Length: 292
Ligand SMILES: *Cc1c(COP(=O)(O)O)cnc(C)c1O
Image 1 (cartoon, rainbow, N blue to C red):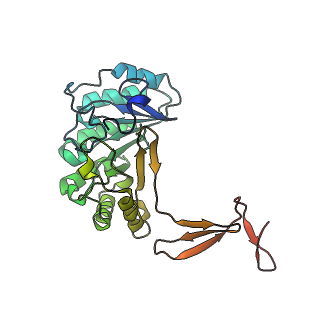
Image 2 (cartoon, rainbow, N blue to C red):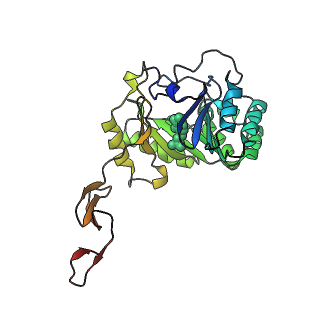
Image 3 (cartoon, rainbow, N blue to C red):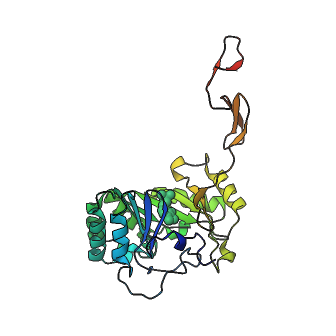
């Protein structure tokens, strides 16, 4: 597919995807520091429209300004950190002048591909715009070089909470040991693993796609086996435009009239007393379990 997540059909203005009630994806440029074969926006990136803002920049900002439901703006593209500091500062000030925009985040692969872009000046500029979060995109522990770690440290020192989004890739990171090493290394780089994406059905990416079964096996090998902070949420961005849907190994084995049967990370089985309709159950004096 060329637009696997149905972004174009959820764009009230070109380059602005409004899929969820309270937040928008703001595509600010079509340029990146390097291009990913599996990119969900392969149809848009590097169309050589130059290094300026999106051609519809004013309409994009105007839509956000006149839509009070938008409290969260995610800047992506393309990579917003390809703009120079002045352009980025202008963009962030324009957003910050909109009273209902509470929260801004940048989605960027630049700390990985071009860590020298994370200069002290950039960090100093960004810290005016808190609360500002940054989501980076790393897929493999070998991407987290010492230069990358230092760049991430500069962002963290500027008070920017860092999250990571990975794409599950066949023969790259579709392995529990690789993924565990990756998420643990991310924490050492002060980055909280946020999402693990099932690879979108983008044209030309079939050889990179791992199965959902494999993704679930990896999640099962992370939860409980390492720090909870290291465990991302595994999501499928629903083909056609349903948004991100979390998929998880099954920990609830059954729900009976008086209990929920669960298993832990080791496969051991436990019971939590609860009525089918969610009412709490109290142990009666007879010692039996009863709905109260
Ligand atoms: C991923 C995404 C967001 C942000 O989703 P969160 O779950 O809040 O991180 C917003 N809009 C679109 C269109 C997205 O694809």
